Image (cartoon, rainbow, N blue to C red; front, side, top):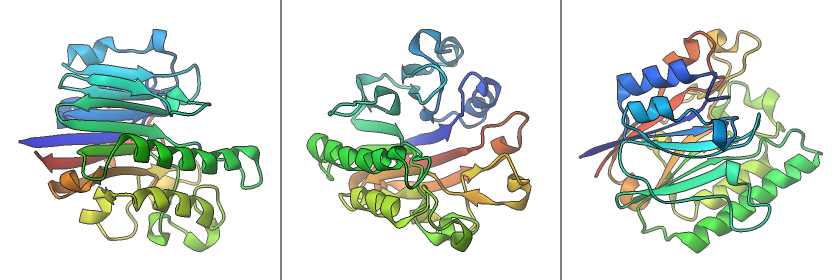
Length: 257
């Protein structure tokens, strides 16, 4: 059985409903995780997804952050937030889908290397590492996906020399994410697509999309039992060319379970 799972930073789910619903119709994934939904729970637009057969789990806040899981299968054990305060429930949500646990995160961006927000980003990675260590084992069937706000390697950005030191492309955040990955995660996209120049984010400015001035900020990680079963992982760039798009696009993986 093929299990198709995807991630997408919507940069406002209500603003991207046409794009998301059309994408669901075309690809019919089992699961789509969405970040930066920017809507409080009482206003979450769940009806169109339910009509298409998707159960919804979400945690959001007005104008900022927000995470969601859309699933064609029942969602169980839905939990949001980290274990420690501030729990940031609108940045992490998890659910059990069959015998697989799906965790989606929207990692803080960091703003400026000298700011408190950058220090908070590094703390967030440390706390997330403890979260995974306390809740899971590398032998469990877990998928972790979302906008990590980190480009891990030079080939993950269009200008590694000029962008070095950015809050999403500097040794501190790369080491923080690497530490988590070493616990037992496999980067599914890099497993199948080793080449440079493949991105999930393009700024709205500088004609970035047309010039392919991109960043790879969105990831699908899996523990070994699921990584071994992953047959493909790819970026769908087409939604970024749509009218009124997000500045991110969809990343999708196929897993044989």
